[in-house]
Image 1 (tube, rainbow, N blue to C red):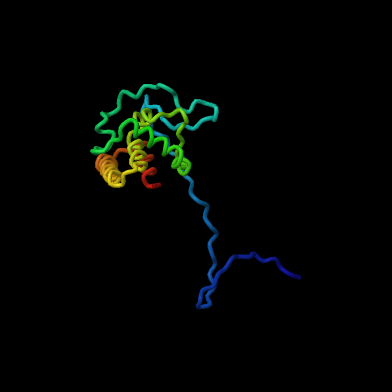
Image 2 (tube, one colour):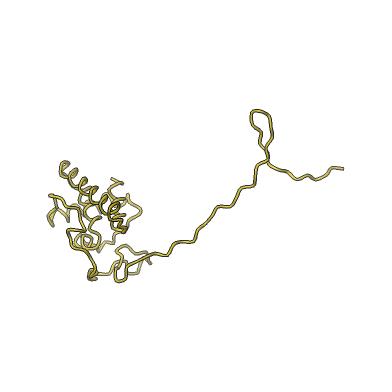
Amino acid sequence: MIEAQAITPTSSDRSGATHVEAPPTPPVVFPPAKAQCKTGVQPLFVRGTLLGSVFRKHSPPPADRASDADRIPSCCYVPTPLEAEENFETFRKHMLPFLPFMYMPPTLTVHQLQEYYPFLWFNIMTITCMNVDRQLIMADAATQFLAQKTIVESEKSLDLLLGLLTSIAW
């Protein structure tokens, strides 16, 4: 008669000794952290239904916004409104399909993007700039601005994250 034996996985090393392997431990799963949002700030990129309103038209900017000088990198090259429109359309047509982490509704204007996400806007203007020397200067200004905001001032925002991801992607 054959007796049933418990089968334990074993492994052997080069010396010929047999080791009993411990069963794998289940992974530790932490609950999601509660998002900390400022009241009154409406996000530009919102998940929702396809037919729902993703971006509210003509919503006023929050009153607690800092001045424009504190929201974009200081750079001697800032595109004109016409250049900004052309650069934004170039980004939307040719580059946005390759950035799966970002959605921009078709109704979004360059002015609205600049108003709500100035660092992302600046990075879009930087990567779509046709003049290489100007693009390098703008990229350097964006890098210094990001270092100042994240490391020195410990600022955390979706604007900084999306701007950083956009510049890294290109």
